[in-house]
Length: 404
View 1 (cartoon, rainbow, N blue to C red):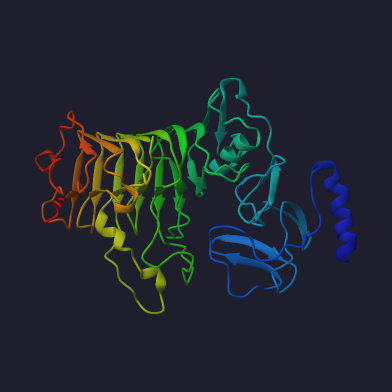
View 2: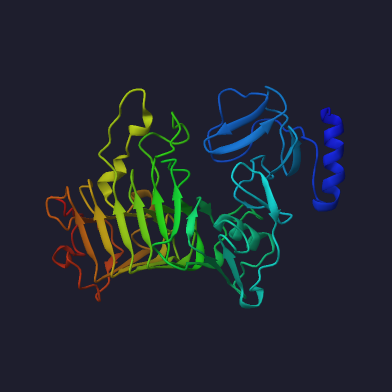
């Protein structure tokens, strides 16, 4: 059967099942729009940029599939408005697509809609966390008036981002994500890439009973989407104002701190009963194998936070009953005041540290921490106590590094 007849057949079939489908590649100058470096060469057909795929009709890259469903070599694929293939999620017309973008069924209304719960995993409403996050976005269910819970059943899940699939912006999402068992509910990414961590989170709600693991087991031969010294956190949180509680979660990265967060004005970020493991090696490179390049962020330990309040504002960071371990970092916990993003006269960051245990195998002091206090406005909350580094907490030093 030739492609024209095959396409006509697909249109007939999908007119029933995919009424919103689009079946031609629109002309668009340039390559797909996203914060990833575009390839130097474009091939006719499938192209990969980092871990993302797009489809070009010719070698120019000016005609590519976007914003709908397309028949390619006898199979149907859905692309977003910028031209990226949708994988492991729910499409805007409620179709489920798996790894590789293959059609895997239709997303039905969640069985527990009355309770505002959508389940993820085998036997659940959708197969992936990303699918649930995007389903809530498309149906505008992630609103303050009626926040939903994404209930994660036991399993190992691919990476997800809470970026709003409907708007394309980092809206703070009103939803919670809850695993049923921390030991069995795992979010894992093996790219080792800064731009594709296991989770990118910006939400107002609770994240609990989950493990986040960043390895470089499936790193491509050449990592080109970010500088070689920037590798994957287990969770990255640089994306806007949020009030979020992490409870009983575990975070592990094998090439960078387990958590990387930029604290924005108005944020309240709390971690309780969590474990952070920074397992990265000191930075090194073996020529011909770039997956052995580790990041300088390893030195910052397992928990790395920097201020991101260029216009001033207030924020609160709380760690309570957490374990913070760095295998090779000079510190285990690091909190920074970024000079060009801190106005001393109008910025106030309160850090609450209660009942935490932090240590580094490499740090000379064992419970090595680094908390900068170069600029007025950073306060260690008076109730901070019960940590194995209490004797190192101070608020009057210009700057201090307790790894020495």
